[in-house]
Amino acid sequence: MKQQQFENLYAERWNRFEVLLQEAELSRPLNPLELKEFAQLYRKVCHFHSLAKERRYSSYMVDKLGELIVRGHQQLYKRKTDYRQKMIQFFLADFPCLVRKEARFFWVATALFYVPALIYFIVVLLKPELVYGFLDPMTVIQLESMYNPENRLVGEAREAATNWHMFGFYIRNNISVAFNCFASGFVWCLGSIFFLVFNSLLLGSVSGHMVNVDYSETFFTFVIGHGSFELTAIVLSGAAGLKMGYALIAPGNYSRLEALKRAASIAIKLMFGVIAMLVIAAFIEAFWSSNNLFLAWQKYLVGAVLWAVVFIYLAFAGKQAELPDKTEFNP
Amino acid sequence: MTTGITDTRVYVETPEGADLPMDPAGVGVRIAAYLIDFLIRVGVVVLLSMVLAYADKLGEGLLLICYFLIDWFYPVYFEVWRGGATPGKKAMGILVVNVDGSPVSFSSSLIRNLLRFVDSFPVIFYVPALVCCLCNKRFQRLGDLAAATMVIYAQAQQARPHISEPGKASVPTDFNLEEQRALIAFAERSENLSPDRQKELADVLMPVLKVKDPIKTIKQMANTLVGGRE
Image (cartoon, rainbow over all chains, first blue to last red; front, side, top):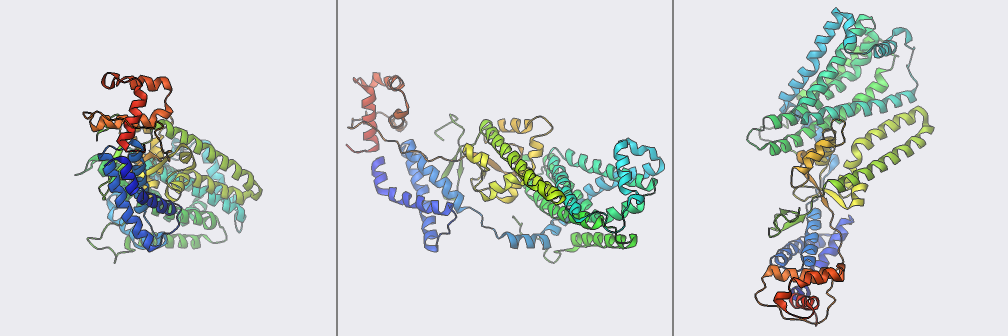
């Protein structure tokens, strides 16, 4: 068949398809009849494209039909997701289930984050000057003035607007650290290990020094509240990074690329949880941890409750939904 | 494919049995898109900091949150909810899709954008990304590999070419399909070629055609091939 004949016969159909396509692209919802027509025409146009290519019609013809099917494909396979429903499901069950499923990476990250901290904490307790091995003197002076009980104001430490400033700061700073901790795991886990150990040493040396200069109460009452969410989230971001990097080290039965893709799509779900936890942590840190209206024991009590909440959530939430052969959840 | 390796086009087979033709976007055009986006982001941040300066400490907090969102979620927003292209990409006529040609999902977009940190590591400008792009046929950077996404050219609407020459001429029967297609391509593209270049190309066929004006003859042959009007 000559090209012109072909066009005369079928152009009407692909023109109609293009009209429907444009409407779909402008996100005007198609009615059921149009949807049916769209799907049928799409298959038709795919067929025309193959024919046109096979019969060596002009480039214009083939490219035009090719363009239509690429655009049609985009519309036909667009995922329509009920984000709200998925989010509820994710945070109530899927996220803690996933953490338990990836427990291996979680415990490795936990060890990487807490063991160096503990060691350095003890080291600084025994040899106080070693705090300068990790922190420069200016930082130490700043930290001392921050947690010096004599600088402590009675009542709310800061005005409300300052809290908002700090909230923004924690959001930006902490979530960026978590993102970097995750992403750098790509490099055979090395980046995640670095971020975990580095932050661990920071935590260990500051805690140790605060005990040495006897500011432990101001420091620990501040840290305990948001620590549950913040530290756990950092550990989780490290676990996500390790998961991704480990796929490159030991891809198992897949090619490295395939293993990487699979691991990344799971690890990113951990990161959704990490983002949520860090937002909660920033909120607690900005509005509760800095609040001095409460006595030390009250702050410890609330802190302990928050730790328990995180622990129970990750250990038990969604347990009943956890079936041995549960199909994969894909947001 | 008959195209061999003369271009960078990749084909993705769909469930309908069609081969989606997609042209991966190379490093140059993506750098240009990145720079446009960068300028837009800087512009937005400057504007925001001027406005929020009036809100004192609260403004500072909001500003930091905005920095954070613009740093990490600016590309994600546009890639997922605005047709796969940030303003910079749109301006350069490229967009992000999954390697199977479907629109990019939130997860994939977040993966490819979080991994920018590795792609731009350490300080030197996007060197790992550059190396990675040059090492695979879809020009994927590391983030694209992990997220199974790629950046392709959005197909621009082309004007319908028409063959200006009236009349028809018979085509030698021993021209195979490939050669016939070359005739049509020449006729359709001739509008964009200088007369000298047209002559140069058409003269290649002189030994076969042995006519006075090969340009005219080829166009008329193309008319015959596409079955156009008299």
